[in-house]
Length: 165
Image (cartoon, rainbow, N blue to C red; front, side, top):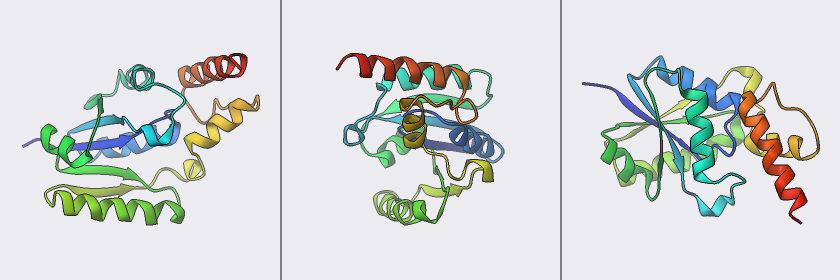
């Protein structure tokens, strides 16, 4: 039986920290579904379609990775996909409280799905999508933090946002 895991997130944008977690998960699971969440509460910079496109471009040569989007409850999506594990990345203690609450809530919703926490490489523990967007928005370079295509799309998107005002 295949071990299928889901790595959910907004990925707005995808960072090298996310990629590090994906690579670690692939060492443990046969198949990993990187699932882009429709989360209107987060007010994302990129549309779901744009995030899916970037993820697919970056993941195209990674065996065992599927990139999809989902709407609604993660536990319903996991059941539909036949996954019994959810992957979550933990960068620092500050992530733990929220992730712990989510894991316990998900367990109440579906006790057949386990949450597995993975820590990224030390060099990515401070990295977040929010910080990447701020750096690019202020004219900085983020080539050490994100794939080249993501930095390019960030610059285009932030230029559009700035000039559309």
